[in-house]
Length: 279
Image (cartoon, rainbow, N blue to C red; front, side, top):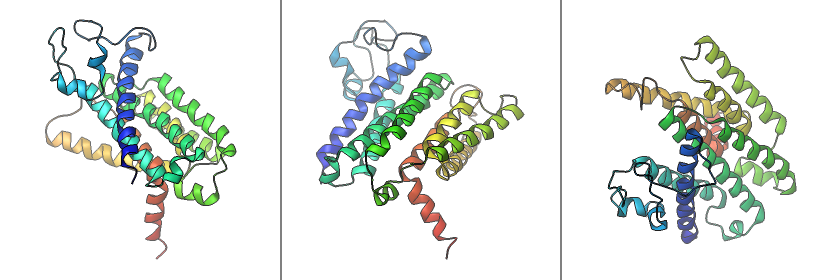
């Protein structure tokens, strides 16, 4: 068992989630991501390092600012928790319970790639929920990371069996075609609904989604996104709540959910489904 490792990964992910919360807020407000220390959104006082311990500070302070006493948004706690859990799921998918994989440079690079990618995707989720936008800078960063991964991949010498087990996308042309296909499909929807059905940010993200996953995993991701989006919409309508915030339901979180599920377990899920068609 390598439980201590996964505990470390969880808190590492929570710390990354804390940084992502700052990134999302500052990208939207136009503040510098790298300059200026974290501060209270209400009184603008600079926060003490003890106020910034992921998860714990929020709970110990009873979600209040120690300086002005104002309640803090659950958004900060949730993004830290979600990122921690997502990092653990990604790490477990890669390393399982193997110490050998844990010290294997190939798998370490793959984990770093997944962490950067999933962190970017989580930032997109919370930007879309909180502000109703998908920041192009974050999409661009995730795309850069994905292109760099394709350039790095040939030097890592994953065996065909490892590629199959991990479900790695290794064909650049397949990814490019899947990205363009997903972009075209969403652009048609955007154009046909005159932007009322979805925002252009969703169209741009669709290219990233296809590029990351390739075909056929992008199809699985889109299916998951549309099904979960429809289910949530039905629940909101049934409860007489039309949206998370405002007049529409952000679709970005469902696209990201489908992307992460397909990234980590897409090959397994597709193979499982295809068994029923080959019986």
